[in-house]
Image (cartoon, rainbow, N blue to C red):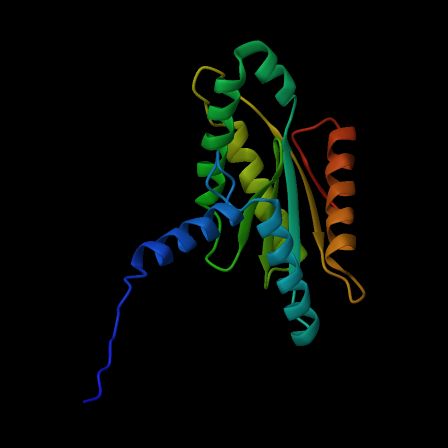
Length: 182
């Protein structure tokens, strides 16, 4: 008489734990948007796709002007509210195939595939204006400076980011609360 023993293990909890870990690895804990690691992966993926298909790709880097003053004056919890509120404002303008994330501290990156530089500049200007005209809880007004750039034939993710960062720095030097294209 042959005997077979079959055992089953419910892996549902393990699969759910794995899903949650994947989300945590790619998401900024405070804002719920992409974190820097996820931004790097998305930018790498989009740069590769763009070079294969000769398509447009833009990067919009921006940060909150004088954010240290917000934290020093109102405290870090108020600064966190500014970051999360700003994230919600910007997220309303992000398309499904864009990637929006927190690059670091109060600095954000918006990766916009299939977008020309003029369209990216207009988007950055809309975002700049909406942020400037929004009243943040307990703080009031804040402004942001924006750097915009479009991909070039020999770009790598690093060169694209470096140019967007330089444009952001140029916006700061130009007096803040403005958009600079490079």
